[in-house]
Image (cartoon, rainbow, N blue to C red; front, side, top):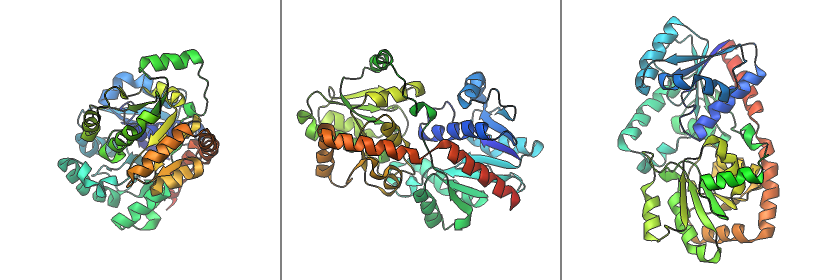
Length: 382
């Protein structure tokens, strides 16, 4: 097979989305030396070609190559430059996420990953034109796709139910932890260097991820304000890009309203090579999201033996299992009590750390890559 994969997310600070494609490609390169892979990137990544190849671990993989398509406009890239390239240079399968390219021969099988469909359930958190774009293009893309991949059983079922798609067309392939999270070999000196780099306090509750409104970080800030005086010197650290176009404005409003300027720390976007160390340094990891397709950050925290508190939603129940403490997103008192307990109760913390470390063994990128490779094979034989 000749398989094309869209890698435009690599190096674009897109957190979970980038992690998925980075690890899928890395593990496909490890398990598959028979098929040919063309990795499609945009012109902005050309200057970092060597770094991209290094991160994907494909420098010595003879069956992998990177093709850069010249355009700075993502819509033109998807709807004009890529189809034009594929017309002259056909492949068997093209793998992307969400929006599929149109005007591509039906002979090319298209696979699209859908990380979540939260925009259908929380439209109030999406800008009007972004929502219009998603409402129009996602249904068209799912109809064009030959195979749709959810990142959990929950997401698979949501796609089938909401878009009324034949179940045989939709699969799920679990996300997992990157290799860097499975080898914790940081020295005290390295951890201190990361602490200094991001101005981290000695003891802190951590949130790390995007700061979209559905991530519910404002709710975390409000909860922290209720119990901070009983937590000693514990601070709240929120890692993420505060300048992103979809950043939740309620975050800063709550900081100001509750006078938490000296209690809540914003280190900004965390470099990939520093993520493991920041999780390792945390006292508690909090993940208050209202909707997730999968939810990688809780697994990342569990891998570093950090106790995790999560919103009680279906996808996190599926992924985190017994490895975290769940709270009711509609009950601030419940959240406050449990956030206090997980911060102060050593017996509870020890139990969660142990069960969380066992939970991560259920997810493996090598297994996910093997399942994806099998899906590619089935597409070519049907």
